[in-house]
Length: 399
Image (tube, rainbow, N blue to C red; front, side, top):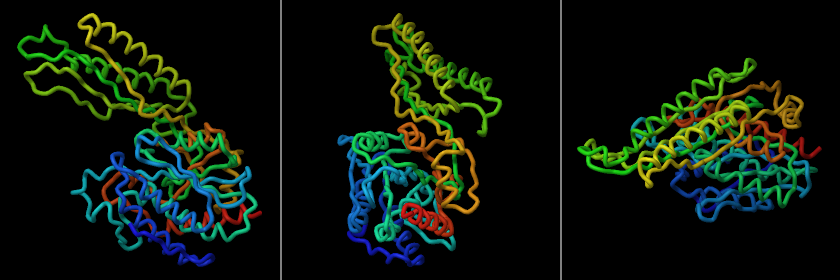
């Protein structure tokens, strides 16, 4: 990544797009997956922001080797707006299916291709490209930029940032989370709870299974129990649910366990997720899973004092349900011509901002349909639309 960035002069729309693409290329080049640090991207952002006089605060768990960034341009007063995005991306393990290197931004006609171009470094690059414009404006209320880490694996970074903001202020009046929505305004989405369950048994030789405790057998019972909950959630689907599918969903992503067919498995790991449409379903699943685990733990203890079931929470993020009379929705009515309000089934950090008392919506360039896939891309026109929205936001904060 370049050590310095030449930023556009305020008022030059073409220069802002050029700066956006330049910044995006540098950000895409940083492979900010779960197993890597995001600090190079944070360093770049802080360099751009401090150069125009922004105040910047880093937060996060020091043990992670990663960082959030919260930057403020304008007066240190309540009532501003925060634009927010995550710096992490999903891996490109299917690199053989890409037609260009995933961590090299490639211009292909009207598209910009590369991992994270849509989800969601394109939005962050546009925000950073606007920094000189924001700094040159006579703001009455501040514009904040929040950049987080590990959103893709349980929204681990944002809670640190929001806790610091609650303690130190100032208090934003609204938040725009720039996930790819084709610049439509998302007012509601499901929550996302992510877990890893480990069944520990007693390993042994396959010829004497009665002397061991097969973790896979008991994990299979756990899987069947989760499947029953998924079926129950279909029956609980609210009649007026705006989501597709309408019910809360539950699914298992990975199962790993055992060494060989002739060895009794000593452990088995399940990665699974639950996406609630409401708090009632979240409470119901929590109670049912706890009861299921208690029964299984009791049975395992009877077989061996070493056998057990444990569940780790990777993240529990509430859904979003922003009313149409929210200040965040009113703001988008001023920033976009005829904004289209919609709901989505995927989860974002907007639920965390909303839970922290900051009315939030989701709106950003690109399509979620290409996120996490080979040849992920964002249309250049979508970046232009995002820059135009940010232009109006500067005007709004100056009035």
